[in-house]
Length: 572
Image 1 (cartoon, rainbow, N blue to C red):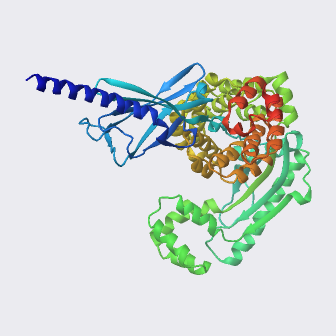
Image 2 (cartoon, helix red, strand yellow; image 1 turned 180 degrees about the vertical axis):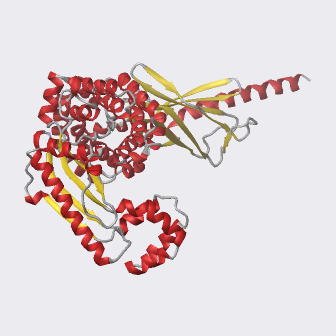
Image 3 (cartoon, rainbow, N blue to C red; image 1 turned 180 degrees about the horizontal axis):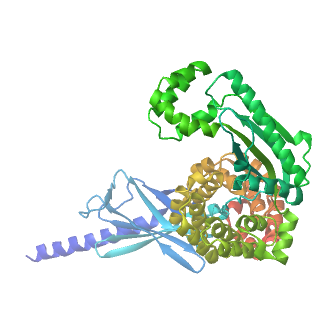
């Protein structure tokens, strides 16, 4: 019995020693474990960082009874972030983790995704590795996996384009005044009952005004005389000619009485013997029985004699036609063609200063486009909203100016007022721009997608959203062939260094971000001097030079330059 007890103690001691020895061996030979990180340098895309670590254990390393916990930890100045652990077990462990063979070794993989924060720009990813055999534990050390985090997509210029409605102002507006006198059948004399009509009296006044009002310009005066299409063609031809002469005589008398002289080239005369066009229009507007049949006759026959005969064959209908339609066609028509001359651009801006209350809606909307000062633009559009509260253009355009002034909340209120009047793609795009400025990317994307009918500027805005989302090919598709800083950035992020350089280098608009991007591309192309020159320009032109220095100093895009004296001097 005593021997059996001693044997049990020996076995237990051997097991303990074996366990400790197993952990010690794993600690001692930890450098035999290999790790592969994808990507080798951590990158941020779509606001998140994805990382995959593959672990490879050699044969005769992983203790059969051990449980190994590998915890990824991102370390950065002022803090660290612990990620999801990978737990592995030896082949004799009965827990529910991935087993690794002692004899053959084995592989395991773990993936993590975490949200990016600015403090993580200069950071390092480690595995904190521990092993345990029952209640015994050992620290296998911290293993550096990768540097991080490249966050170049952050450099996207969040400058969504807001859209405006065009004004309908025309300085010169063509106008025409039309009046006519009617004749008795087979007669051409001008009757007093006709010349006394209000429309003829107004005709005389209109002609007089074109001569006296400097804001009206007479462009032409037409006299068109007609005969109805019934009767003989010879008679109708003669009647139309006579009616033209009597109408001209009447008009000449009126011009002489008003002391208005009309240049010969402004007067045109026309006589139409049989007014079939007028007949057709009058028929279409009537409720005459057999109307459709008569219109078919007109479409089927071009010979006027045949037309008239076919219509006369519809005796009942022809009686109504003779009473209601034909008298309207025995006429002479006067047409005064003129141009109404509005305020010039200079006059409009002067009136805004001296007497803004005289300006009507379209004049106000146009005047706002003539001034350079944004505050004045807002004041003019505000006046337009007061003159016409239901004009969505005035509200929207005021919002666009406010947005470009950086007054995003005021702009949002103006856009919402416009949308309350009418839903429109332009307004939805602008509300999307507000959402993007406020960091509401999903809402911005929804608004832009709903307003694609507003044109190419909406595509540009969607391109910005797709850069933020990390979908660089889609961003390029939306940008199309238009060159812009954001298009150049999307090309770089999509792996097209050469295309990105060409686009950015050829931009007429200079900006610190453009220079910074050129510096990044040059650094990755092993052109340190070019990179430093562009970075120097970026810092010099940046409104916050220290911020850009700090960014560059911690930006792993410039890791190849970190030990360059020129780079160090620039960012310190």
